[in-house]
Image (cartoon, helix red, strand yellow):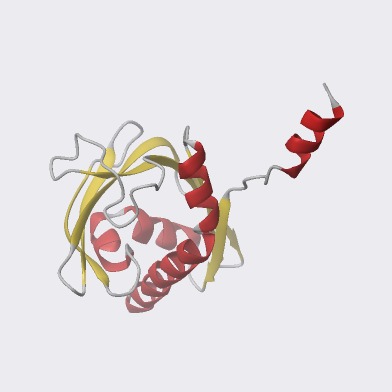
Length: 176
């Protein structure tokens, strides 16, 4: 390998997964149930200003949740999490994508066409003395260079979106 190609590789920005955590004053079983039940999902999923207006769920490995989010301005987007692994109440691994209304066809992000078509999400639930921490790790699956660049540049927006969702989860848990 020449010094020039070695230099080019060392200057390439390293992509890293998006990670966000939040601690909740509730036992892990309660948080896991709120995270995975259809009723819970309808109350927390989506950033502030977005609400789940329709959803179906088949919570098992190979199953999925398919949902419709509506923004305050009336715009809508369908999404789907296809579960790869579930270890109740410790973690969930899912492939996340935007879809058409049927949930069968993966479509580009309605607001960001260069967003990765699929992402891998790992949600971990840990508990210490009745306090549960949820950690979400998210990374694109087989992105194009443009999709990887968009994902890497989108961490701030993902933080804002997930913060809104986790705020809604905290509010929902307070009602249980």
